Image (cartoon, rainbow, N blue to C red; front, top):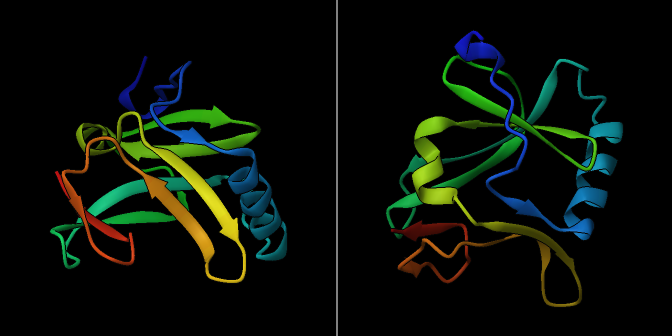
Length: 118
């Protein structure tokens, strides 16, 4: 099997039903192309050292692909070290609205929850 076609049977991250619902709504509203999926990853930066990546993108070399509730998910293999076991949730209440990252690998996080250190 080619590196580009690796498909995992078990997702390394959990996405809650609330987040799945919001992602599917965004996919519909933004008319995301069929060959794109949800990219989950990390970038260097942010006030705690690493920031989360969450967006729609095409599959790239070095990505692993898995499916969660009908959504194609792409994650660079190297990011698994930081994201394995993470849960992505979506909150929509009076105080907050947006995606929430519950990461057991984070040793500290910033106040807004969008960056962390591991």
